[in-house]
Length: 96
Image 1 (cartoon, rainbow, N blue to C red):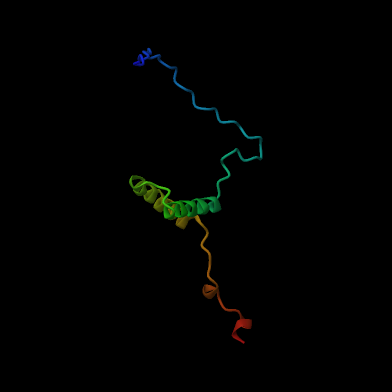
Image 2 (tube, rainbow, N blue to C red):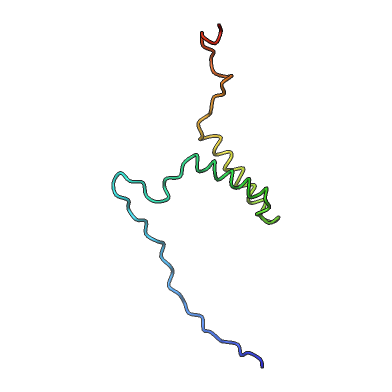
């Protein structure tokens, strides 16, 4: 037996409203606004691990790579620069 096609009439839907942002009480950070530099570094690590494990399709790799490069460039600008011990000035005790 052949199945009969269901005919549906296209209803015009009312545009969906964007969810209203809830105001956080004074002194509290609203949900989602507590993203830190450490979180972004972890995100870069997640992308690196996922790409190594083959989590992305070939046609997605260019987009993932572009976003990863943008994230790395952003982190290089905003992340505090860590000083290496050999770059630190020697103290008088270290010369003895």
